[in-house]
Amino acid sequence: MPDNKTNNSFSELFVHLLQMRTSLSSTLRPVYKVSMTQSKPMSLREKNRLRSRQELLDSVLTLFDEGDLAACSVEAVAKLVGASKTTVYSYFPGGIDEMLRDVYRLISQRVIALGTQLRDAETETGARILAPARALFSICAEPKVGRFYMLLTPALSPLLQPVVGVASGTFKEMFADDLAASGHDRQSASLYAVVINGAIRECAVSVAKCPEQRPDLEKTLAKVIAGIASTTR
Image 1 (cartoon, rainbow, N blue to C red):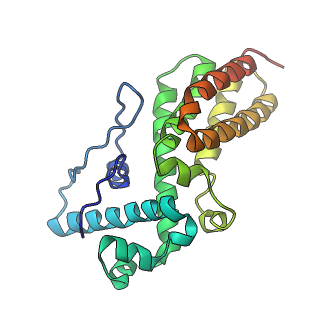
Image 2: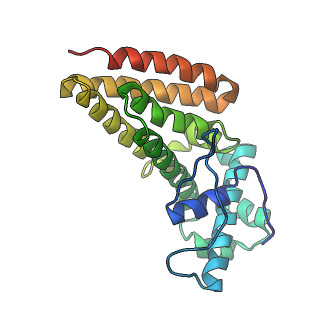
Image 3: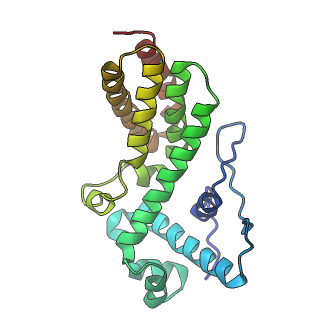
């Protein structure tokens, strides 16, 4: 299949997640290195299969960016990468539904990994709570990725039901834990976590639509979180 080189290649994301490594640049953008190096060397056949799978997933992201769910089909994927439908199904027996879920799941894993790493680097409660939001915003600001991850249509949501909400649920637990550790009782910490989680999601939607808003939204959210973190019940 032909190379499909794009900025923030989803192919690189896929390899990165399989390796379970996260690297940060000074601007908080993840740096992905396309490498087949693992603890156990992969065979040439395994490398080729992984590369082909990456290209198929990358094409789904491209198709969705160009025409939403209506543009996504096994036929369209096969045409874009220059393969047969049979080949596509050999990698994804569940067809386009499976591919869409895999794309979403991989983005979620990336958000969680980056959010966790940024949070672990902080000690102050407000900064720890803001860290997952910073991770989400940075990823949502990327072309294609943010639009797919945050701007879901009603028609698409049912397809993603098995994988939607994983990152959100993980972060909500983190927020509650940090607030409880700072002196909030568990009940109020859980309630505040729900409020913070909802605010972060709305901000992320705005970032996906207009990445230029990211700095201002992040600053405003930081003030809201600082206010919550400084109160106890």
